[in-house]
Image (cartoon, rainbow, N blue to C red; front, side, top):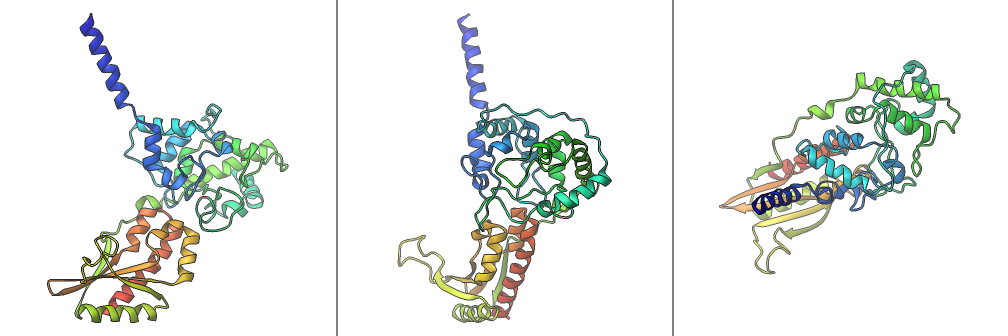
Length: 345
């Protein structure tokens, strides 16, 4: 009997150890964008009461699993079902109310009439084709009165996660603390709202899936060999930077601050430069560009060869999952390429 009890206790202990920790999973995967306590940042504020009171647990699970292709929210396909449940449980713990439950049956409505209603009531925030508002999360990069950018209603991730009834509920009652107000209070009938739901659901037939098939660049860095000496290459780079209407901020030893002063390699140099309008415009789109802006190019001399290198913005664009940022990253790739070519030809 004692042996059986010990075996049972060992199983209980193992189960407790193996149980996913929702708080830790959130800290590891979500807090950087959504804030330690769900107050928002690059991502929307998940702890907002009107958000948690208007989405069911399956919506949260599907959103985490599928993300929002082409928007800022990435997919997390490698999380197990148990980990997803733990994460959702942690997010739900910020609400003092149980999760709402929505029917999965389609809402009946006239999408043609819904289209007309959408044009007069929704386009200003959600865009002409339901593409959503521009920018990210809360006020990191610009002044903003409300915490949530209007979501992309034509996004395949959203359409797969949201049931008709959940969309209907949001239209009926709105979301306090956001620009989404109750359509009933704005004078629409419940039939009108059903027509709007039918129109939003029709986006599914033309949903933009480009984000799902985006080509991932093979090269994580841009690199070129210089035929000039280290000093000549650095001077060439300075001239090329200025010719691209960028301002040289400083030239420094790459290892400065990383090793004891005086022990830095003199053959590894980094140039910091910036076009402040470009920087401001990019930050306004997505504040995460602060990870690689202002711009930096590194010059290394090794075994008699001089190489010039910098991070590939196209690869970062893939990581950031923000289509609005893609164009900025393409521009930055072109600028880096032009500067390096000018300095090494």
